[in-house]
View 1: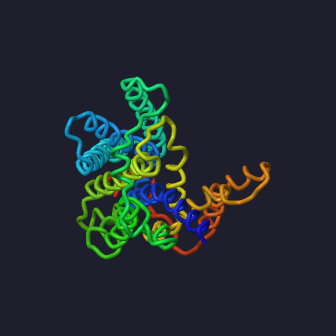
View 2: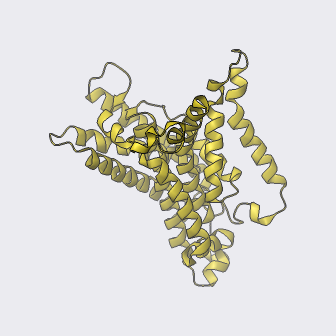
View 3: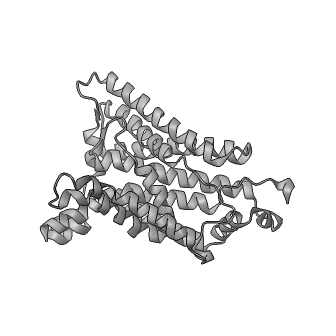
Length: 324
């Protein structure tokens, strides 16, 4: 039971950045915007939080709670600015969404590596990473309930951002399905011309969804650095998790609540090979499991006839009001 509890706990921690990214992308795609820049935004959110925490840790009056708040606000601000770049190019200037998203991802990774590398040089570190141990400890702090044996290990041994990710997924589902603003947002993603004719401000809803989604995704990058890595920033350390988050959107059928089990499933598949006694030749096969599942999800989605399990009808299409 102890081994399973450890595996379960690591799967939750692996899946949490994916959940942030998936929920953010679902909100964005519900407005009709296909933001392939999510991986780059997660990088920008992470390094923005790192920069804020780094300069605050240099002060003489460091308080962990304030360090957490500064890191969160810096992350949200950086993610917002990156999302606004995407919005301006694709919504205002009507640039191609796929190309813009890929360019933003490339920019975000380069942005993170440049400033991360610069901070490492500033500290004159002899190792290729930056440590923000105090802020990282504050992010990963758990409650006393974590000591309740295997049960506490499985459900209460996480920092606050794990529970925040689940809460945001639930709130996003309520917003999209139970509120007038959420229904307007879905209408924009399905048929922006009809929504515009009904008096819904298409541009405003697209900007709102893309920026809100980007800020949520940015929190995934911050979680990975501050909680999962314990406050350690290493260039290119985030890997391909941003792309897996986008794949989970399809796997979860564009439903935020379904993104919760989907993210943790992908998190489990990501680390499964570490908990199996496998010959070295088999390890690469098990490391491929998240990507195999992604391909299967794409195949299943492409052959479905159920409209409710399909992406928004206007996903990836720029809206020209004059074409109504």
